[in-house]
Length: 169
Image (cartoon, rainbow, N blue to C red; front, side, top):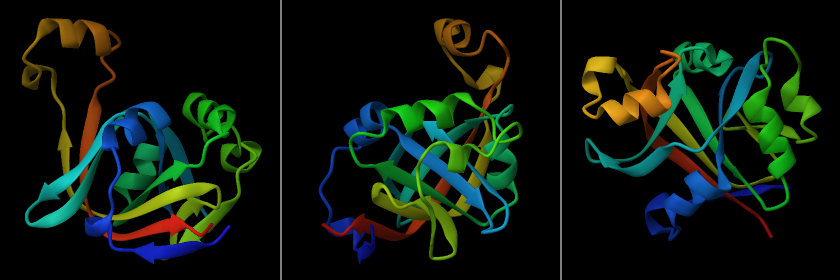
């Protein structure tokens, strides 16, 4: 599969479906060493006058190390039919296995950043902000109880979408 560079501002898609129902892969690192994880939390919009994407990564996730140590990260939205791969990439750690290759997906580099050939949409994001979500920042106790009983909090990343690619059909 090959990709065509697109203008993200001219695209029409439902981010709620893309992120929460279809899921996305957050990837970062170099061609020699990188990691990815499945995520269903995030958003797209405009901040600081730029098209941007947010993603949230728990402190325990191996991918966090790669996002923390990289200037860029990618968000890959796979074509239908890859739920099994998304489940594996969201439940296994790259510390323990080569999950990117074991998933059956095809790793590719897009603008020097890791992504997957099976993606229908790839967003290349330049990290602009990193913010720790602390327990005192969460205003509803039920949110703390439901999502953070294990005290494994998230870091929020805001990235400027510097490039976007659609799969060629």
